[in-house]
Image 1 (tube, helix red, strand yellow):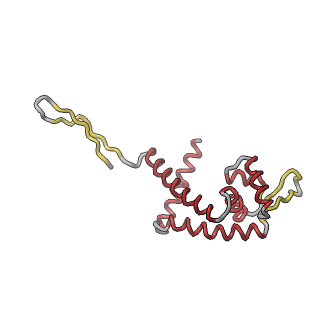
Image 2 (tube, rainbow, N blue to C red; image 1 turned 120 degrees about the horizontal axis):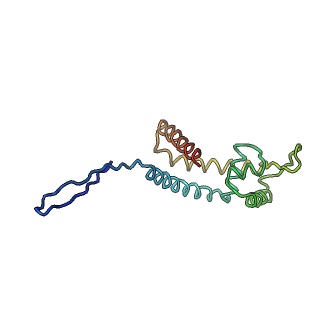
Image 3 (tube, one colour; image 1 turned 90 degrees about the horizontal axis):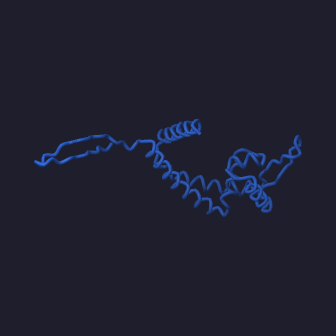
Length: 166
């Protein structure tokens, strides 16, 4: 907490306090700034870590989703990794050419294709993700188990509040 004082001098050089206000660092604007700076710092490490895997950022993200969620329709993956349909199609084409994924037509809806990791793709992303996860773990090692739970709980609370307002 920081106190801010406003002063006025009188002709006889006496100082009179004309205002006093408390300003705390825990304002919405400050929390957003701290959150943004922390996110940018984590993102920088995240991008460096993914670059070290030899995969493109979008390829890593798509393969990570498939590793953890299993086969999904292309548009579902696009929503999870925040890619447009055109960018998603290009990325899946690239991954397919490398042999990391394959498209499988949905038997109940011939217009829909699910993206699956191939055996090669699963091996590539598993190895890449292990190294990536270790690097990200180093970032949060400054937190105790209780602090980690608190951070997750509080960030979810902020996120849900923001979603309700949007």
